[in-house]
Image (tube, rainbow, N blue to C red; front, side, top):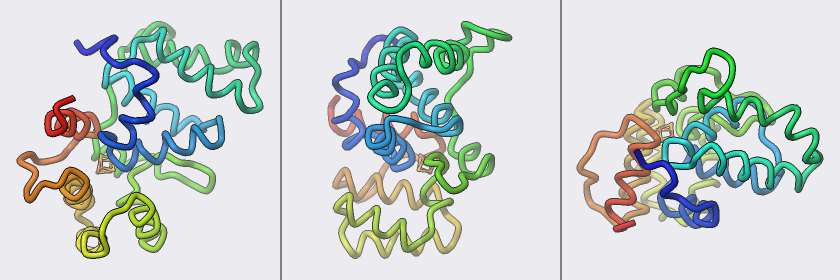
Length: 192
Ligand code: SF4
């Protein structure tokens, strides 16, 4: 229902304000490496579709980033465009894929070396997670609270704490179970 509401120019700023950490880190690595492996393309591509990117926008978004790297436009069209159309249900079995929930991200297809998908609260080494949170300007006391929740394997609560800290809220009035829900709640708070 939100299709077409997001412009491609908004994505960088939205990623800093309203994306959950999993999507923020995928976006950052895509911008840095001009490439993403399959797991990242699926997790992030479906999330972007969920926040309102149309198929045409998605093709433009991925193509313009990939051709800044090692992939030329011709190769992009041959090797990657299909999988993006597929995500939108325009190829293959024409399933209209839905964005992954937190449980799916946390429990399936754990990232390996060189991957950027997954849930950073679940899949990042705590020391690395700490560095990421510092980099994103989370306060030391906030970081301790998050790491405590991670230690207790409360990954979604850790993410919710990250939401509260980055939105200056005492108590987020929702129970997080989906990255796209995170985005919607953030936009509500920020009046976007
Ligand atoms: Fe993403 Fe969910 Fe993990 Fe948060 S808890 S980082 S939204 S997968």
